[in-house]
Image 1 (cartoon, rainbow, N blue to C red):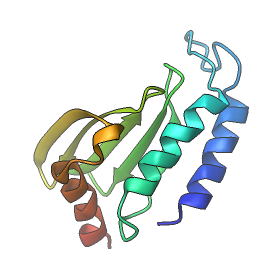
Image 2 (tube, rainbow, N blue to C red; image 1 turned 120 degrees about the vertical axis):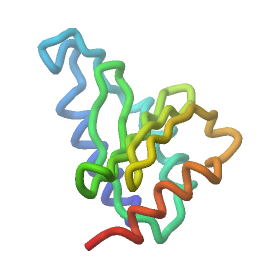
Image 3 (spheres, rainbow, N blue to C red; image 1 turned 180 degrees about the vertical axis):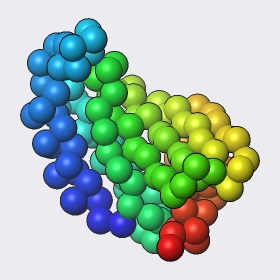
Image 4 (cartoon, rainbow, N blue to C red; image 1 turned 60 degrees about the horizontal axis):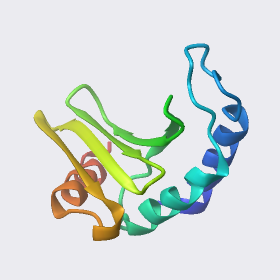
Length: 121
């Protein structure tokens, strides 16, 4: 996974979503403040994990998603305070949780992310 290219995507997202109501439904503007928690999150992911897609969230945060079919979807929302909320269906198993980045990535989350690497076609 190349964190630099994902951070470039995030820079474009911030530019595109930098005004309030960018989605037409009252979304908060994204600011540069979201970059640092995203950097910490990406740095904590194993180098060998599958590359996530990054997208804006209406609360001014960034979501990272891994997807590989209907029974393979995982989303992690990186909040400005460094908290991560995640949920997904990984091989038919429903998983979710919330954790502070200060504690690192929980093994359950890392294991779920790494399964996407194993299952890529």
